[in-house]
Image 1 (cartoon, rainbow, N blue to C red):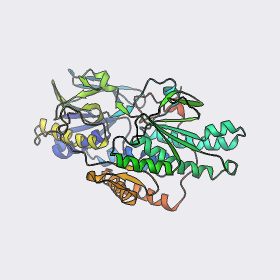
Image 2: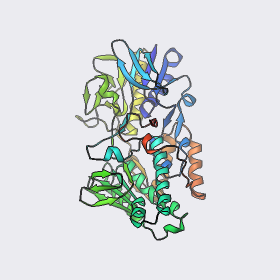
Image 3: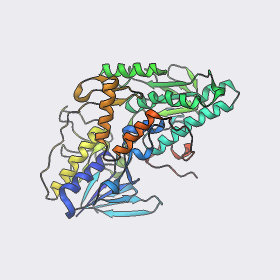
Image 4: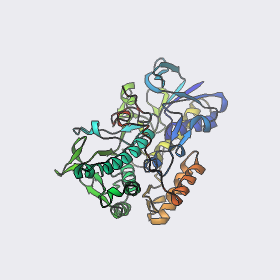
Length: 431
């Protein structure tokens, strides 16, 4: 018997791990994923800020899921009648893989909005290539600013606009000033040059997903770091050298970071299954109605939220991880191993790292800030990571006693990480 799992993120990784543990060697477990690693996405902002090496938050799938077969590739088609999936490998060769059970866990990609110029000029934040690009890009802008005598160009290159004040956007923006401060310190010619970081959101406060108290904590830290927080504000249009805000203000800049949210992987729309809010309709047991051999979980699945009747679970890592585990259990049960269960999960709270000894957290819905929140936040991340804990903790330790790296490697260019992409996990080839 063969179980094919599409995706190696929070949902797919945990589905494979649970299935392998439950069914043992009697079932072949295959994970099809564009990369050979599981990405611990919550720590990606620390990679873009030069605090962590990307290898610290990328956990080897074949190295940690022993007995699970990894197939490098991006799934493009599913034949439900023929029980096969079609995929393209990293060398653009087409392949086909048969299955007895299929788990759709392809995750999500950058959310797009029909705003003129955004798709062409902005960059998202869903994968390692985008984080490495942003780190190099910010470094390059400061260095180019130091090299020019044009005050308008210098000001534009020293202005950074982040759209979306959710978890990712807030963490990117709050880490930014310290990173650019370290870069500016290397260039005496930038002495006295203001460096602007702007965080925009159409909501009326920062971190609208969290309680108002935690949102106020994050807002205060952002402003303390020098970030200009503009609520009820977004981008009206964008060009390579400026953005126009919905307030009418034109902001000269060379940097637009898009963190407005996510949408299900486009594979969902291509396979033809019934959807709700763009996600595959599933039961509380994560099965796809009418397809007894197909399951879906994580960001691609519209999972009924039994704790809030009539609603679907949010697209968060916390839900994806737990749904993945249940999917593994239920797939095993469908093959005769164990007993199936239903998905019911009350969120355990959230953590947001605000850098430099600051964080906002509500573990078990107990609001925390300052060092207690920081300790809880980092402990949570270490416990949630399926590997590389020592490497990550060491990286944090080094960041407190040494200077962060401030060189650009130039390995990922802007054309390799377009905002409108089906695969933010891999850089695109330049023609």
